[in-house]
Length: 303
Image 1: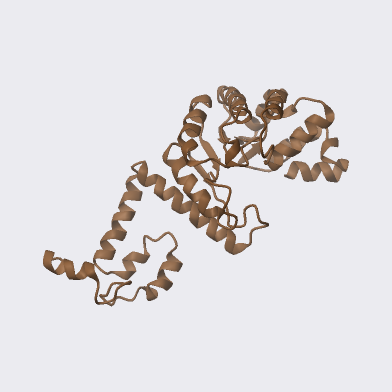
Image 2: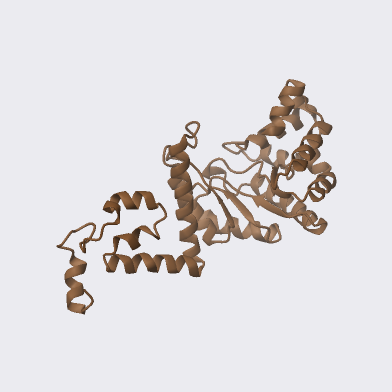
């Protein structure tokens, strides 16, 4: 986005920025100490032609991808970030910046998941990942937005295979299109499945996704939903710390220890309020003194 802002300020239009503008801006921010940059270098005219022929429902939903596509079509020139990729790598290596390879044509609806355009872009990304790795530049790959559950595992396997095992930074994934206001939930569902199948980095999605700008509460809810998804995936992948955390919660519930139930909670503040501040009263938080589990526990000799 900073590239676009600078282009508008300097040239008056995104499509009027020059190749030198692009590389000068990238080097400026790299020199300023950025750790990683999301750059749409895996977009070229072959990908755009595939997109135009695909009959895709949502075309280009990536903001950076849309700006760059407009620049290419307006100027009838290849994407400089693809065509001069070695120049880009030299800048990133000089300043030790990680390349986060943007997914310019990620699917913006479940109808577009795993279409020809997405796969073409992934093939190009894989070729560039190999060049980055060979040059000594750290690289991760940004991934699909909207992915139905039955496509998740195949998408993760394809990315890992085509992109030489590079870390996969997924945007969502959103498992359905029909839950505006609840896309932190659709994202958590898809994100948990994707991370369990091999994704490495979840990008949180807020309830405001597709509706407007997020406020502070939206950001909090989105971040918590993503943390839940990541924990669920850690359990599925056999992460020892995740399993110990769940075990701690289960034992605290059996022991009716409210303080110890708060400690492993992902949202400790919410748990503390719901559990009355963690005050021990030896009663079930839900049932009170008539808890069925407590009654049964007496007969097992553990109450």
